Amino acid sequence: MIFIDYKNNPPSEELIEEGKELTQQLLALPEGKRKEFIEQNKSYWGKLKDHLASLSYGKCWYTEAHDIASVYHVDHFRPKNETKKLKKDCRIETDNNDEAYWWLAFAWENYRLSGNIPNTSKNAYFPLRKGSPIAKNMNDLDKEWIGLLDPTDETDVMLLTFGEDGRAYPACNDDSSWEAQRVSLSIRVYDLNSTTLVEARVEIQNQCKRRVNRILRLMQDKENNYNQLVKEEIKEQIRELRKMMYPSSELSAVAKHYILNRTEPFIKGILC
Image (cartoon, rainbow, N blue to C red; front, side, top):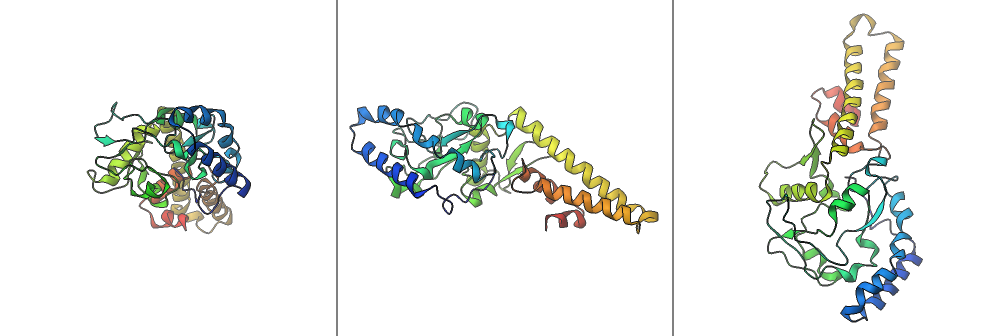
């Protein structure tokens, strides 16, 4: 998952105003006409796709993947037409908004760029903590105890880590905490541990491992310690590792976590 500073990088004022106008028209409709109106104007959020992609270097906000996550979709973080009760493959008891968030259908703040894997898996799920208040308007959104990690929330992104097996895990000491449960819910709903993504993370970690091991072998070779060619190769390996951690690189968070989890102080220093 990648942090997107969305609120400080809004779409064009023209598109924002268009969304506001559509929202006003939607609010004025009787309940039976809302879904039809949303469907008739679904081209609106497609107009924002390029802007959303530009904020993540073309990566899916949930998986931080390029081609791995296949076709991109504009996901409504809070579902616009319905919400499903999360039961299958999940032992965490949650609530959900039975009425969905139809009034956010044209709110740009509710859009997330999603690859095919998380978008298909997420479907209409939006779990809330058991007993959470349920938002009925924009002013109530912050009152909800949402069960999914939000890529537009910097602290949410920090709750996710990756194991050597390539799987996503909670970065929490207390597995029973609500933070850890949110990670578990997000892994389930976004399908963050799909085989395709896990295999891709393992490959990134293997690339990092090969470069790190090469650096360590060169540094341990006492006879060539002052050989300029050896120094240049070490520098090149470090440059390549840093490239893997660039925000524009695919699965850069996986590379960062790998370097961060190494025990050698010199290797950890590559993060600086």
